[in-house]
Amino acid sequence: MLVIGERINTSRNPIALAVTSKDEAFIQKEAKRQAEAGADYIEVNAGSFMDKETEYLKWLIDVVQDVSDLPLCIDSPDYEVIKSVLPLSKKTPMINSISLEGPKLGEVLPLVLEYGAKVIALCQSDHAVANSVELKMEMAGRLVEAVTAAGVPLGDLFIDPLVYPLGTDSRSAAATLEAIAGIMNRFPGVHTICGLSNVSYGLPNRGLINATFLVAGIFRGLDAAILDPTDKRIHGALKASLMILDRDGFCTEYLQAFREGLL
Image (cartoon, rainbow, N blue to C red; front, side):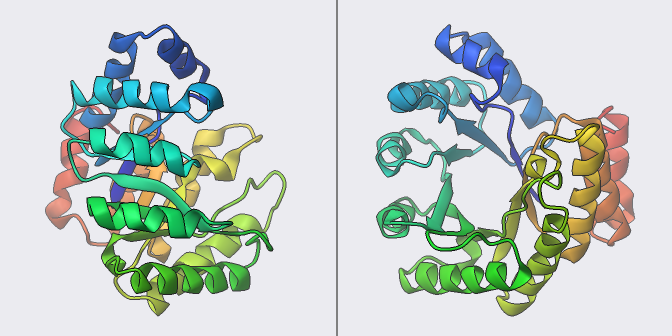
């Protein structure tokens, strides 16, 4: 299970304040905490500062890489921003994201190839909201076709079927889970991913909802997630799920996480 640490995102007020005040120590503490909690990638996102996104994202990349050897997940909706910051990445990055909207697919895929990057592809288009299993599967198929036709290996593609907040669409989680299973079955070798916190937006006790959805997703084949690895409930749900599915021989990872105080 690939874990992308989500905490360094300027949509979070403490991160936004640290970025504007150039508080390197705060950002580096967030990076180190996520690395110590088992993140495989550290996501960096400065998208809430549209006029200074490139400047702030470059700063975040440099600051994080000063204290962490983990590869980065570079998160921006803007092709020009992604193009500007990719050369700063010391290790092969992940790009978040492409979709079927507008020209973005055609713009970003050459960068994916140039840098050998992994890429997150959203089931999202200009013409429809992927709120049903059928639409999620149809868009996933189009993404697989476009990405592989461009020469990107299927194993570098992470499809996000997009789970919407349960508070506004009570069917979204179930549809997403079914789509995850369908995508993993129909396209062997591809990966599925989700932005875990989306499912609980606007609801109380969000950690419980996030952890429960994560478990359900793993049992349907989900093999990557953007989440907070420092949240013990989520971390525990992840480790316990992998153990139950016989993907943790002799319960080694679960016991190690317990000894390290991560559960």
